[in-house]
Length: 117
Image 1 (tube, one colour):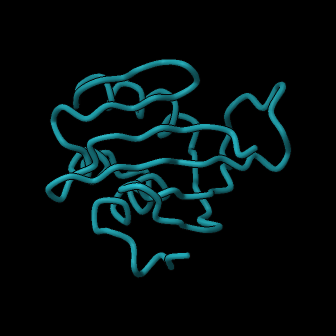
Image 2: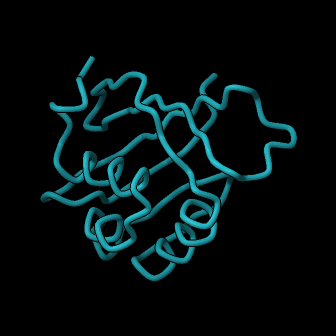
């Protein structure tokens, strides 16, 4: 298990930017050609990722409480408790998710979000 202080810098930036609703820092954590997989969708590139973040993270005040971190096969797997003002219909309470993150050359190149099973 990795502590928050031991996280790679772009992952730490991603968490901090999400929790502080800081779009510029959020964008700087991602590579220009990064891809996000969220709820069966593929979101590719800065413009699309920032549109997704504006609508589904920043507009609904999402925060991520880091519960645990594991390194596995070149990915960092964050287990997070998700909170915010989004529609919770059909979602478990608390909402615990895994964020599988790949970092290449100091930037997030892949982020996959899924419910913790």
